[in-house]
Amino acid sequence: MEVVGWIVVIACFIVSFVGLVYPIIPGVLFLIGGFLLYGLFFSFADLSWWFWAIEIVFVVLLFAADTVANALGLKKFGGSNAGMWGSTIGLLIGPFVIPVAGILIGPFLGAVIAELIFERRTVGEAVKSGVGSLVGFFTSTVAKAGIQIVMIILFFIAI
Image (tube, rainbow, N blue to C red; front, side, top):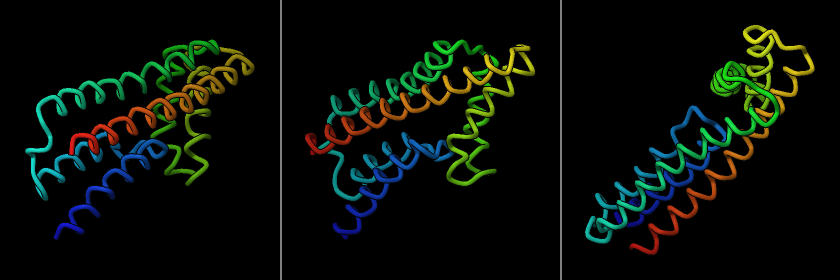
């Protein structure tokens, strides 16, 4: 049963990283789920209150990194709030419409279309905003991957 427990915990960690590039998967929930499943399979005694306090801070950092990186990427390239919403919608819809490539094409097109329709930007300005959404997405993904790695390292230190 111990082997099954570890397989399930590690699978949750792997799925959390898949959620970095496939945003429909709530990666942070799988990460926390892995911690909770460890407690259920083995023991919560290893996971002290300081572990949970630090992990909660990192969960907040995950959400902040996602929001801030996307917003900064878009704003740095001249995007607006409409572009940010368009990018977010494109990020959620893109992978379903265009498997694999939709993760990049979706946010780009979402930002461009939103800038063109709602902000009345020129095509050049809208495309620049779309590029900003991609820069924000990549920056966000790298930041979240780093945070998740630190969270897992802290987990292994705690146990």
